[in-house]
Length: 263
Ligand code: NAD
Image (cartoon, rainbow, N blue to C red; front, side, top):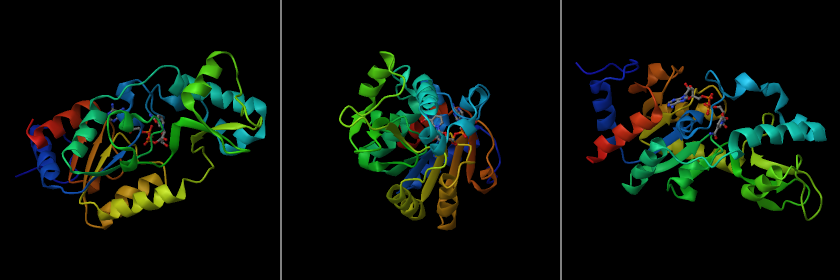
């Protein structure tokens, strides 16, 4: 007998079942969280040693960012430490997902990540839906001018602690969605539509506790898609997955996609 849906095992039979699901799928939506990027050196939020073991999430809300220059200084310091301190590179998880696209099976990537590593691995820009925005840009809250993050990052390295717009002196904000801010409506609507239209929904590296992002696998399930979950730790949707592959996303997705495409 094959593995039962929801059983949390990373064995040959579970991998084989996942391989069959990927082979049969025509429209795969891959949904990623911070766990696909930890192997690129970017910490996630909730694992031991993650971002919330060093910073208090209450301090990093949109209203706090807007409240004072000191709050903005702290925000930029945290973002610099996590995302700008070095050049993160895609890892085998990102490359495996890009390979699905080259094989014509990837409908899109819906990501909670803000690091831009899916695009860097070769997934086309128009196929990546960034629910929580991106660290690739900052923009001026007064005049809207956009700045590539490399430029802002260079200012921070030179000792500017609270970057301002060089055109109008307005406040610069990274294009990430802060706590207390709405998700980009068009991105969320399109991600929802695609989740409802796919035949396979593959979650990788997400605790599935941040909403509304975590509704998307539920929409996919309700529309009849099969669910695969690849994660280090258990999620509340494991019981509804066809297969749960427990372990590191880089190793598992690399193996899964290689086997599925017969490489
Ligand atoms: P999360 O921190 O809540 O969960 C990450 C999950 O990934 C955990 O369940 C953990 O067990 C798992 N994980 C960690 N390393 C893994 C690995 N190598 N392989 C497989 N699984 C692994 O993250 P989330 O679900 O994305 O939600 C939290 C928020 O984190 C999102 O809003 C996102 O915007 C933000 N975030 C993004 C980044 C990034 O862009 N790289 C980094 C940190 C946080």
